[in-house]
Length: 188
Image 1 (cartoon, rainbow, N blue to C red):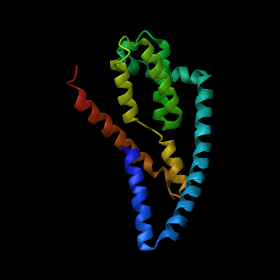
Image 2: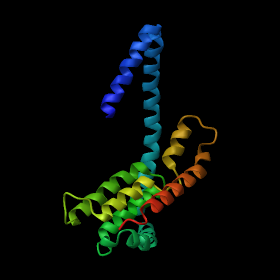
Image 3: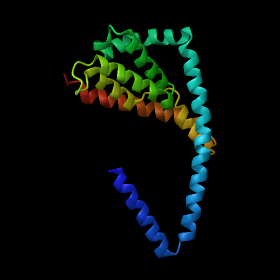
Image 4: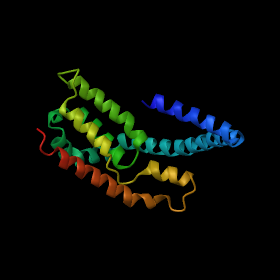
């Protein structure tokens, strides 16, 4: 759907710029936007590398095992089908830890790995298992303590207080989790 909407927007933008005599401004804004996009990508790359590195170091230490142990009761409650599979529990835990720390870019490959492992265990290959669905919902709600990616974006755009977003993010993630729980508590 978006592959149809965006070209329409672009065509209308060019047509409007030509008709209103603002082609010069459109041209200039295109080049400014590409420059801003590159700057943003470079600043986010540093943040992503830092936190991915920290996650890799934590994975090789006892810190990750302690965090996984802390999350184990929650994992067993949310993913009862995976109680016996320690590797999948570890992958799910690492994804959840990355999401809690607001490391969406680090959480994505961890989440994909967890989904692949759950698919291997799935008896019906053409249907998502309950654990896979729960995992998708948890990742969609993305409960975060430290929204590092959002803070990095706000910082790169010159925000005077880039961490001001933390409290509203907490409220939004808790509301999303409560909303999801209330809408699904009667589903078997």
